[in-house]
Structure formats: structure tokens, C-alpha cells
Length: 244
Length: 244
DNA sequence: CGCCTTATTGAACCCCATCAATATCTGTGG
DNA sequence: CCACAGATATTGATGGGGTTCAATAAGGCG
View 1 (cartoon, chains in turn cyan, green, brown, purple):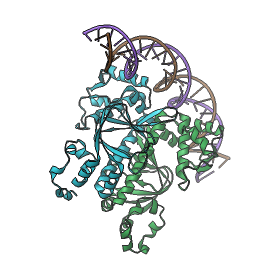
View 2 (cartoon, each protein chain N blue to C red; view 1 turned 45 degrees about the vertical axis):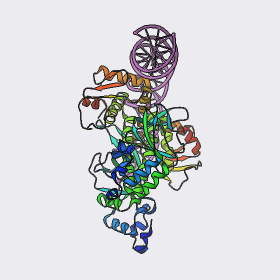
View 3 (cartoon, chains in turn blue, orange, red, brown; view 1 turned 180 degrees about the horizontal axis):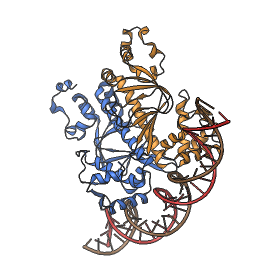
């Protein structure tokens, strides 16, 4: 499957891509060297500050992007302002909705974010050239679907306490990609979301999130410093609190 | 893309597939004639009675299937019995989770169901032979993802009244596939789920679902006969009740 | 009709939302 | 370095939407 890689000498691989985290995990790993060089010509890195909106709900989209660092939140909003976060994207996720001209969700930087953006049309051409690329995107879609369904259980059936514990557990798993998901040992991380965002993710209010965090703290399941920095001494206790 | 279809005369297309609803809308429409004939040799139609479990949670799966008629519910269950329905599959949906040996959800027939089942390994071979097949599955995965996110908003942020109205609206859209989704005129359909299933879908209790249906009935937004048969005189009123 | 399952309706309670006040963090300028 | 202001988070008091428990009603099928 990678036989065409020989055609172009490795030294021609763009430096940008060489050092890019997304090179081997994200979609770019599915490209031929020639495609990688072509894509690079039309791509650009962008730094986004926390809070800025990348794509509005139902907005036309003409570019896709790889998340290089930071966290993107995908949110749906009702006309009266009620909001629900329906997904979080971490590096090296692909950001975009293939085969649709408009997004069904709004995308906003939850932290400072680095992106590598490229034209939608170019990616769609490459998809048709290289099945492996579509395969990667398909796998990401299936993974996101699994995650969305996991959250449907959380949203529909868990208590506020279980929701908050589930959220912390999910973040712990995602923020450190090198960590083995089976590892039940201690973990330390920074929350990438404000209390308001956490509430919008869990279908709760800010106050309830805050109260449940206090309860977890008083039960010694977590420790919190400076509102954002979390330490979990025993992952298994957190999982139990999450209802798993 | 269909040039290889000439190779085999149309008359060789299996009768089963000829009359199968899934032939041109589901995944089979992406197969070459040769593949269709090969798949047919190893596939079998099954009739499933309402309530029987097709796949358990985390169960190994060795077959995939097309839904020919009826409704399948996909559900997640917690160890203490709390349940959440995370998806419904209507004809001609593809049933299965490609690239994973085990399912993350339980699948159960919500009504009497007809399936066309085939070996997992055979489909995966065909995926690698024919990018168009993966493309269709990819599109279905993206569509299911859109639906799952739509329901996350419903589960997390809507009131019980809005949830029930949203559910009725979704069913009205899916049960009659020939209907134009933009059509706001009257609609009549049978609920494919019991009150208990509706509750598990909406993250509510049976009692709350029942009360909200009564409220919708008293507001003349719906009419119900024999518990299952629903008539919606004005789709726009239902949409408003759903919070759209 | 009679039995069993499924659905509706009622009453009491509870979890979480709402409203409100206080505390903590962050960063900016004196 | 501290003071201040605005944003963010915590904590408290109260109320309501949905659950729970319980009884009645309506369908479905022999």
C-alpha cells in the first residue's frame, strides 16, 4: 500500500509535516508523499485563541483542518440560547464534516489551539484518489459515533454526580494520549473547559457542576488546584463514581 | 464507476436482491454485479420477532446485516439496569460495527424485523476491493453521528415535553421514507416502540412519557388510537413543541 | 369473557435548577 | 508588589419538573 512512497525522496517531505504531530496518527499518515507535498502547498498553520469561533452552526465550510494542539468544542444551540456540547476534538483529530457543504454544529476553540487548515475540495479529491484516506476518516467517524453514544447514556441516565465523574474520567483519558487506557494509576491534568462549558457538556448548570466537584473533592476522589488543575490519586475510584 | 457491471448479464442478479429494498439505497447498491452474486451466496434472510436480542453488549460479532423491514433499537445498559437507547435503525440501514470485533451496544428488534445477514469477513474483503462500498458505509456512519449529536441536544437540554415531541417528529420523518422531510402537512404513523422504549430513548420514565403524550393530545397537536397509532394534523405545531 | 401486559392517572418526594450572595482567580496598572 | 476590577467559581436558600410509588384503566390475545 505504500509502494508509491519510494517515488519521491524522503527529503522532499515538507518540514512542517515532518515535525507535525498529526503526521503519523491523523489523516496525513494515509497520504502518499506526492499528496503530502501537494496538500502542504495549499495548507497553512493557524493559531487560534481560546474562545474564538471557527465554524458557525449551519455555516458554509470551505476548509478542513487537523488539530495540532489544544481542544475544540463542537456545540449545538437552540434558538432560545440553550446549548449542548456534542463533542470535543483533541490532537490529532480531523476537523470537518466530509460530504456536506455545511456543518451541523458550531466549532469553537476551548483552549488556545493550533490548526493545520487546507481546502475542502483538495481533500475530497485526495479521498477519491486514495481509499486509505477515506478509511482513516471512516474510522474517525466511527470512533466519534461510539463516543457520542457513550455520552448519550451519560446524558440520559446518569446522575449529576456520575456525569461530572464521567467527564473527569474522559478528560483524563484524552489529555494524555500516551497513557494506556487500562492504566488505573494516579493521573494529573488540566481541565480544558470552564465550568460553564462542562455544564454545557453534561446538560447541567454551572452551580451543579461546582457542587459535584466539591463533593468529589471532599470524598478525596480528586484534588483541585487553581480551579483547573486536577489530580486523581486512584482512577478506579473515579470510574466507580462515574457508574462504570 | 459502474463499468464492471457490464461483465455479468443482469439476469444473473439474484432474485432475492432484485426485489430487496436495500438493493439501491443500502450498501448493496455499491457492489459490482460479481460481488453481489458472491455476497448472495453467503447471505441469508432472517425474520426476527419483536423483542429478540440480535447482538449483546460487547458480544463478539461475526455477521453483518441489512435491515429490510422493521426497526432495530441500539441500547446501552449500566450494571444496575439503567438503560439508554442510543440509536434506531430503519430499512435499508446497515447493521454492524465495521473494524471492531465486538459491538459497543446491544441490538434488539423493536418490532418484527426482516434482515439480510452475511459474514463479516466477506464484507470486509469487499470493502478493500471496492472503495465505493466503504464510501457508503462512511456516509452512513456520518449520518448516524449527526443523528446522535442531535439527540445529545435533546437529552441534555430539552424539557420532557420537548423530548416527547422531538421523538414523535423523528419517527414521523423516518417511518415513511418516501416523505419529503420539508413537508409540513399532516402525517399518520404507528409508533415502533413501547412507552418503556420511548422512555429509554428520551432518558425519561414511562410515566412522564405518558403524561406528556396526554398533554400533546389535549393540546390537539396529536391524536392517538390504540396506544400506537398516531396522527399529526399539523407538523409545524409538532416541530414548535419540539423546540425547533 | 378473562387474564396478562401495557398504559394512564394520582400523590408525595427529591434531585437539580434558579435566584442570590460571597469567594477566588487573573491580569492590569499604579 | 499591591490594589483594583472583571471574570470565574463556590456556596446557600428556595422552588419546580420529573421520579417514585401506587392504583386504575385500556389493549391484546387465548
